[in-house]
Structures are given as structure tokens and as C-alpha cells.
Length: 372
Image (cartoon, rainbow, N blue to C red):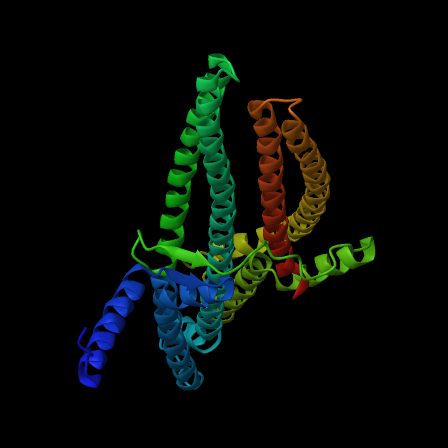
């Protein structure tokens, strides 16, 4: 055989490298960590971009309103209507504009929280489905091998045809379940890709191996819960909005009363109604804050209990599956009976993962009360 020259060898290696590289990049799915997925989602979300633009416009409007307020301070109207308008420009509109800007910023924060919650659920639901699919695929492959062995035993007369058919039926059922999981996983993948701005059929490899644990101690005494309630009642946007509406109504009504004797001045009655009803509405909003915190805390504790219960069930199911596998090797139970125990173990593991995800989701929900 003739020896290849160095140049020829280089060309061959280059060609092989090029082909390999192309295959790798064409077939390699995206590897995405949970944190990266969160950052990516925030950066591509069109709703957030729209809200940013609206906030920028509202900021510019607020600066303009404040500038007008400086000039309006020295203006005197030639009529009641004009005089009230000047006082509104000076005292009311800057407050309204600032409050509107605050609401927009708060709305954006709420959008981000909701998006993070949505992505968290989709990311780790896909992780659970991946795990569930892998477990089912392992069962299918093992059952295929068992069916091949059973076919040989059937020919040699070591097992009955009914025993063979039982394994075959079991394989059909497992294949059906596997296909269902495949479709469910695909739907989950579509949802995650949509949040990340990817092509909907883009394949993703999740780098996380398990559901995150809660990153704070969830056991709080009654005094701590009361403190959370008081702090959140001061910062809750629903409460703030009602208090701001009361402040705006008082300013607007004062501007009317100070600058006209017309008791039926347009808008005056509506402002008086707002002031009269404000105490009731604010108290209701404060009560809602307390109720939500107490309900969410109970839900958090229940979710933690669910993890503990499902963890115990999984441990028991694992032991039963181990015993069943040993019995099968000894010939005291058949393959179908053994796979039932394995299926129960796998289902228990999935239920545990779902309980962990629910706990993590509830911990994220409750954490918003802790930062106030």
C-alpha cells in the first residue's frame, strides 16, 4: 500500500473533522440550566419589553407634569374652572402621574414573578417527565428481553403459552404508556420552548438533576407570621392603590372647595364618595393581605408534609421492588408480578418528585412575603 503524503493526510483529517463538527452541531440539543433559562426568558419576553417602553414613557410624562406644576404654582385663573385646573396641575397631577408610574413598575415586578413561576413549573415538569420516560423505557427494554427469553422457553416447553402471552400483553401496555409519555413530554417541551423564545420543536437537555430544595426555614412562629402580615399590609400594592386614590380624592376635593362656591361642581360628588368609601375598601384590602398570607403558609406546610409522606412511600416501594426482584430470580413469582412492584416503585418516585416541585413552587410563592 502506498503511503499517503503529509498534505493528503492533513486533507483527510480536515474533512473528517469538518463532517464530525457538522454532525455534532446539527444533532446536539441545547443544554440549559435552570438559572440560564430564567435569565433567557426575561431577556426575550416581549411583554416585559412592552412594559419597559411604557415605564419609560410614564417617567417622561412624570417629569413633564412636574415641570408644568412649577409654572402652574404662580398662575391665577380667570374663572373657577381655570383656577381649579391650575391647582390640579400644581398639586394633583404630579401625584397621579407618580402613582401611575409606581403601578407600572409594580405590574412589571408581578409579571416577572408570574413568568418565573411559569418557567419553574415547566422546566421541572419536563425534568420529571424525562425521568418518568427513562424509567418506562427501561421497563420496556427489560420486558422485550424477557419476551425473547420467554419465546425460547415456550419452544422448549419450559413455560406455557399463557405465560408467554402475559408477558407479551404486558409489553404492549408498557409500549402504549411509553408513547403517552412521549407525547406528554413533547407538549411540555413545546411550552418551555415558547417561554424561552426557541423554535417549538427545539430539543433541550436540562442540566439540573433534581428539584431544588427550599432555601429558607419554613417553620415560623405566630409572632413572625404577624410581623409578615404587618409588613406586607404596608407595602401591598392593592392597599397602596386604595390609599393613593384616597389621597388623590382629598387633593382634588380641596382644590374644588378652595376655589369655587359651586356645591354641584362637576366631579365633586364622585370625589366625596371615594373618600367616604375608602375606609371600608382599605380595611377589606388589609384583611385580604392577612388572609392570603395565612392561607399560603398553611399550603406551604401541607406541601412540606406531602414530601415527607411521599418520601416514606417511595422508600417502602423500593424495598418491595427489591424483594420482588429477588423472588423472581428464585422463581417464586412470575415476571408480570415483579414488574407490578417495579411500576409501583417508579410511580412512587415520580409522585415524590412532583411533591418536591409543588413544595418548591409554594416556597417561591411564600417568599414574596419575606422580603417586605
